[in-house]
Length: 369
Image (tube, rainbow, N blue to C red; front, side, top):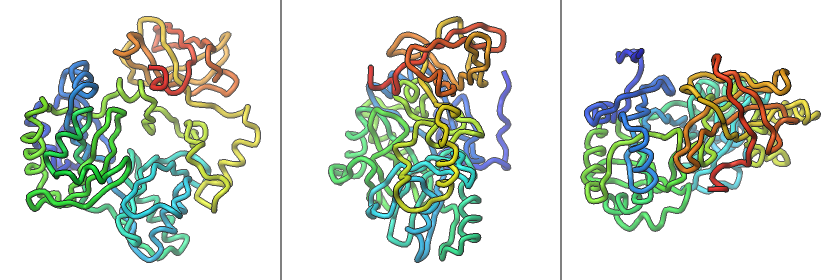
């Protein structure tokens, strides 16, 4: 099996050494950084996430920091969702598009102060994009990548663990809300969030030199709850309808096609890509949609998108497929033409020479579990 070469060209998070020592076996490159994707036991890690608590090195979930008098106006302009009323201390999920209306990220917008915002991003060069837009449009802001690295604590026992770490302040932190706290002198922003549906928090470490200390404190607090290292989990996120930008979308997918239309405030003010998104959907039948599918057949490892057909004619592609422990079957996400996006529609898939059948089902899977 091919392996990733670990070197200085790709950045490491403040938790990288700790995660490696804890037994990380698989990595991906995310925002030009190493990010663990498994500790060698996919089903065990899934079960722990679903029933217990796990700690994830997600330091590759970088922040775009926007500082200056126009910080709010700029964050609002580069976001498809209206951020004009978002209060300091609260986060808001928002798609982002380029000027052609193509989805380029789906971050959490976080106003730390009125004049200081973070965009907590998925995997793409949003910092460079925002620097370009700010300069071209004359916004009075400075855009940079700060020293901020999240450590995720996820699962039904996550709240107990975090309470033991930082105290009853957790009761004041609602979903997508955050507070600045210190833990034994370690500065961080704690938000009730994370890339799972099992509940939890992200600890946004704001001093990268303290990564090992924070990791050790979190694991010490979690010993009573059977904590173990984990990672964002492909099975769990597909079961629960969580989008993975670039995995689930291609280079010609707009936010509406990706299922994010309800977070695009088309009736609010202008934003990057608004006119293009409207133009792309003047003929909605010409567009595609991201749909959930059941998959039948002997599915190989899902490492590439696979073409789909209906009656021998091209009909989009299966973007990703996994085994679902809850449904006890293979499931996945597919980009298909609107006319084929109706639940019950069956499509043929060529999985690199292996014939599969996928059936469009309701979105998200989580609503039917």
